[in-house]
Length: 131
Image 1 (tube, rainbow, N blue to C red):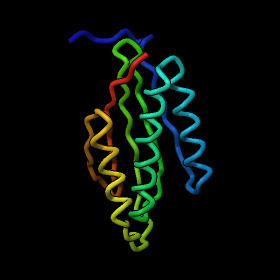
Image 2 (image 1 turned 30 degrees about the horizontal axis):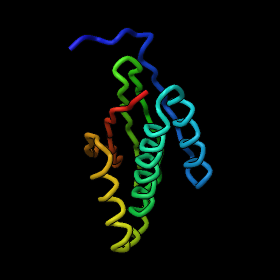
Image 3 (image 1 turned 180 degrees about the horizontal axis):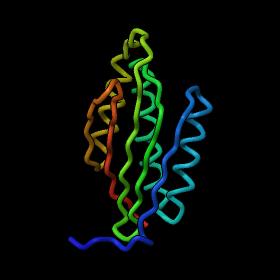
Image 4 (image 1 turned 120 degrees about the vertical axis):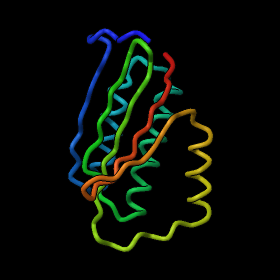
């Protein structure tokens, strides 16, 4: 595996204050960052971002930060979303919401995982994009 040239890596860190306007702003920033990739890649990535934000909201977590590293050479996106517990009781998900989230994860080719440290849950995703 070769190391990508520094000019081919685009990094972004977005701190969010909470609320629906934060999620909307984050999506618009992700969309801007993906300029030059295929409309399908942008659409898939935004679906994943939406699902991660909705999942945090269902768990009564507040999304505090989103980090993105876009490798333009390999056309690969690494996204991390941090969410902090708010102390509220998680919202029960309907069977439809659970099925929709699982269907999305099965349809979008990606690697993903979760890690927790210091009360922050971080969900990471790696997506292959197309130009």
